[in-house]
Length: 229
Figure 1 (cartoon, rainbow, N blue to C red):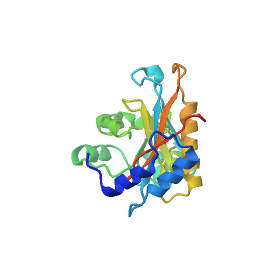
Figure 2 (cartoon, one colour; figure 1 turned 30 degrees about the vertical axis):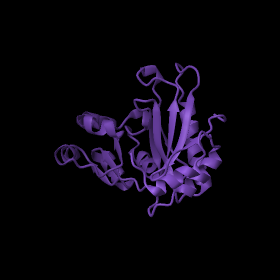
Figure 3 (tube, one colour; figure 1 turned 45 degrees about the vertical axis):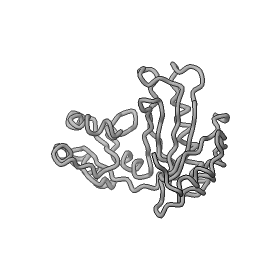
Figure 4 (cartoon, helix red, strand yellow; figure 1 turned 90 degrees about the horizontal axis):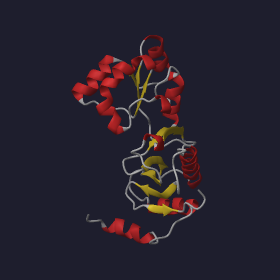
């Protein structure tokens, strides 16, 4: 892939083979984030597990201390009193079969989080092939299938993120924006790492944290030291 001059200049700022301490990595990634827009900063964590085995899955959700810096658009599948609760809690969209049709027939995807009450999962299940690959399918384990829709909406708006392994046993999650202070980014990174650490499967053997890297939208990645983990 051909890289721009600016990207190559940023790449030169990263010492080859060096594993940066978290504080150093955040400082460097902030220095390289010079785009005209507020770049998203992501953490990439490779784990020593095998996601092909059910007993080695790593998945969960966490409300980042300082949010993600993104305005979350929340879609809620609910009826009756729970639909009213969702509207009062600030959900952007509330409905049932009407939104299933809109997504299926119009390819409508103008939302960032999906919450559903348990009784609506029969309806939401029709969207498995659409929402699943995008990581948007409601799930009891991440608190997005719940009767406490008001709290779930509050958490989503506050910066709740879901983490889960991809096919290469890596977790990719946003941890903030380049406009965040170093302290806010570190708080978010440490919160996510702690959550992943606590989610370690009992079946996982050997080194759990294989590698950790930080990257901004328009910058090369910075490899972080796993010694403290």
